[in-house]
Amino acid sequence: MSIRAISPWAAILFLVAGCMSPEGDTAQEKRSAAQQMKAETLAELYELEPQARDQISQAAGYAVFSNVGVHIILLSAGGGHGVVEDNRSSQTHYMKMATGGLGLGLGAKDFRGIFVFTSEEALDQFVDSGWDASAQADAAAKSEDKGDAWAGAVDVAPGIKLYQITKNGLALQATIQGTKYWKDEELS
Image (cartoon, rainbow, N blue to C red; front, side):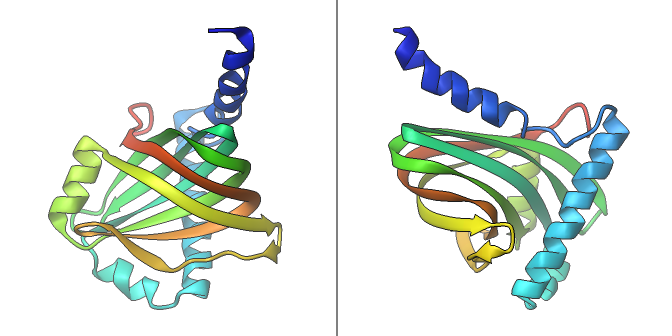
């Protein structure tokens, strides 16, 4: 493989690697940053979709993830971190996520994903085994307070609904990609 072929992947991985953990030097600072991201994201979601508050309070649990994705021509990658709250036990789990794929597209976006686990089985499987997702097609255009921030819920798997809020970015893509979620051993 030539240096030219490696360069786009290296650039994408470098950009995304910094997004896989919350800001902070210590584990406590990182947990606090993740909790702040969760609170701010939920406040924005409740403003955009007021019924989400009841869905989340009645669910087995929920997760809030901060994600950054980059797509350069045929390559895409992303990374992020999140907080999973088990409404039954009041237990908190800190997790990471990474995504990679191939397909046509160009752009970058910073977005938040809010998972609502309507079944205990779905929540337990997400926390214990992570979760894999694939295939994505979307368009996003948002900068600061300008642009669109869609937040509708989508059923992504049995027992799992997903709200997605675009924070910033400009992207147009159609990709086949995989996304993996796993426990952050440093913070959990």
